[in-house]
Length: 520
Ligand code: HXC
Image 1 (cartoon, rainbow, N blue to C red):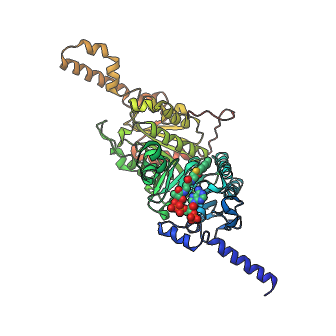
Image 2: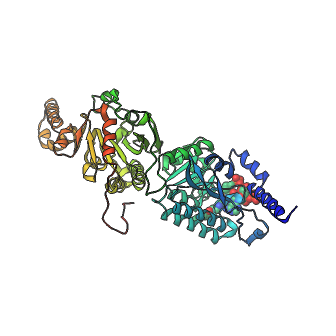
């Protein structure tokens, strides 16, 4: 065998060894937990044959605790680039079979390298997390590594989409990288995220709590909102990431891909003419409205189980990607609370950062009252949503379906927050407050002075009717140009698409500043 041939064989052998990560036993242990390996995950994520791996031979440099005797090519993370549906992405997948995927300084260097490359190439960066946290033997070096990653998460936020998959443990400060990225997908029953684990919780607070109860996918996708998606299993998690990417542009200078659609842009949906009940206190399902207006009725929802009183997600309209934000009358009457405001604000800001037009469907009776909300800073949180809409410069099309009362009307992309085209259905009620509340304030003294309860009720009803006549309609707002047109519900798809087409070339900017001071 020639020397060259021998060299090549050594390379092939070394590559094969590196691909085994921590070895066959640890791979079996990973499978036994119902988990895939880092490489198996990447094989599912990327187009076949597209993976270009970097730093396969990188080894840690730690010499503490006998670590100098144990080295694995590639260390605990697999990094590189590839394509998804033909579009370039950069990836890293932590390899739990090597020191539990714990982060060494060299691992952080590998991760930072692909993050930098993603930003330079203008391509999304996807991280698949499965790690025991900082490599304990490396001490402060591992912490420095996390710091390097976080800094890049921050610098590239709003430059390229950053997506985190949580496919195993993600604990301690490690949780902050996913928290800094745009979207987090967790897998039910095999992944968890928390700052301090069950053992610490028990010793500090005496509370008994399982991994799943403390930081599982169900908890974070419904209670904390830390996870945007809770996948049934790893395959589902990977599929979610792929589908999400199909709605996004590669970077902040580009538009999302346009999808061919057979759904006619002028399709009317007659059922929408009847969807708002005659009784203003009766709810209806906003999902039905969304599916009635978007291409093929297909809606990709984000944060599905968190703050269900507001709905956010992506869809296509005449083939173009849009972000939908809609109040849900079926939950808490569609009122805005702390979590709904946070959820909506984060989504609006993402869409704005990545040139995705926002379609807002409004039916909001106001902000949720009460001490719990006020003590939890509903004021600052509501302001986030207001701020997000007000600063957004992407095309903004708003349709008010029914209630739009008070501050909540302003928050939900009204004209004065630089809403581009604001439409209303004939059932819209755009006013400072509902009729009953208004009458109680305006006629408080008159009503108190009436002793007979029947007379009192009759006067209240009369005044309510007068108020409704005056304000419980869209025409006051339309007369003043605050609403651009009152439209027939069944034509909503066509009108919104036409609005979006007319806004395709929109250019708007913000005053020069270092950065804003969003009410965090
Ligand atoms: C070094 C680690 C490690 C770590 C796991 N391993 N975590 N090695 N540093 N942080 C090693 C284990 O020793 C073991 O090696 C292998 O990985 C697999 O781990 P197991 O414990 O056998 O797996 P499992 O039973 O599934 O438990 C997984 C686990 C547990 C829950 C993650 O390993 C664990 O609790 N690890 C420590 C977690 C932790 O405290 N991390 C530091 C958090 S603080 P062998 O050779 O036996 O197979 C932190 C600060 C970050 O991360 C701050 C950033 C700003």
